[in-house]
Image (tube, rainbow, N blue to C red; front, side):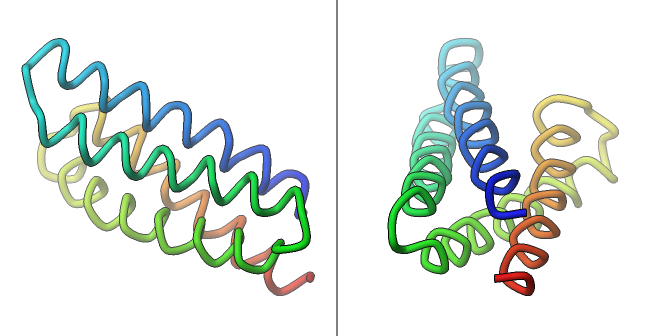
Length: 107
């Protein structure tokens, strides 16, 4: 479960980072660039921490970021039904929370 969660954090981090860049390029949204950049880098950091001796720290960091992303994007998705970014980020955030909790329980 640890390896799956680590890979998930790396992939989700890249998607979030690229989504922030895309939001800036397409709509000129500095908020998207900053929020997507920070969240993406934190998810990448969580995956990186899990590669070393700080597996629990990486899991907790990833859990917090995924909770934040799910909390931000799921309500927006339920309101607008827009697949991108709300649907993708919201659903991936929920999966990240589930993976992190399961990995913490199995650790």
